[in-house]
Length: 369
Image 1: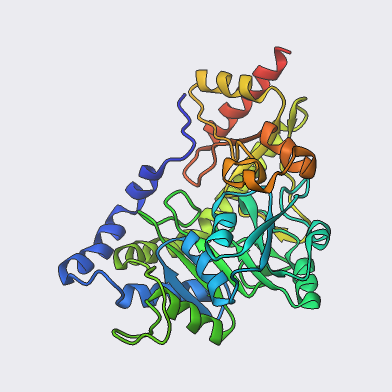
Image 2: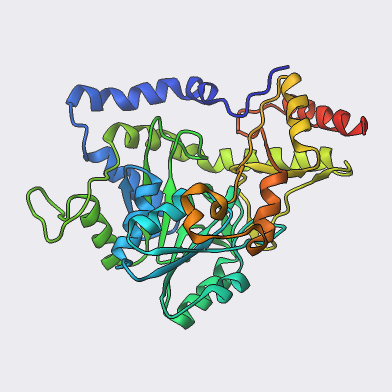
């Protein structure tokens, strides 16, 4: 039985009539920048997240970068961010002219901790980028309190956390900015690069919109130097079709994750993901810690089960950050995770039968030891 890690074609086939109907008017009108599809998506996504403002952008990385620029982060500043994340989270700090300061993560939830952040704060700390990783909420409420006490800005990277919640608050609305990616494999994915920023502060929303559009809110109006990062009209039309399905897709992801946990419980060599209390984990990824990981991956591949590693190397140990001279002992949790994490197939169209097959195969592998 073949089990791909993701299956984007199945989702398209299910939505094909709606997708085709949505993009046809855009193609026929020849209006590919801005327009009603973009405005509609911004309105509806903001409402879904209980945010006042949503600004559609070219991708999630641009959203993180523009959030830093809008908060006036630059040369001489330090920004604290998790050692365990995708490089977008840290590279934007350097691109903004600031210095990335890595903090280790929780060994159970894989997210940055308030205690590690407090250790890293200096008089140059101007912002914290929290990552709600794999769909798991960080302890954002507590981190927000620390940031407020220290007059530090807070950005939430929600690229893997569409509809995740903490104490009933949807991801992206606790920080000054919440940044989302709509990369095709995300829980809400476009058919190319796309992203957005949400906020509840009007002045921050206006600043992001200006920065993303060459410094102006309208053509040939430039109050500042800006950038070019806009949500394509075609991608907005596609996202408008998908958005009403996001809640049901999230529920299905959670159900499949629960099935995985039920079937994999008790297997020696596997540590299952846990969900932080009073949160909703949207399970962008289902990530286990596995002994003999490489042998397990090879075995599963032989059973035609595709797995991935998120991530093979913690950020402080990437060549891009060799100038910081970090050692594995500086980030013991992240150093351990890079050797044991394994992402199993999980997407709304994944059948119960295939999940059971994956679990049976994992159990069979560990029974040989």
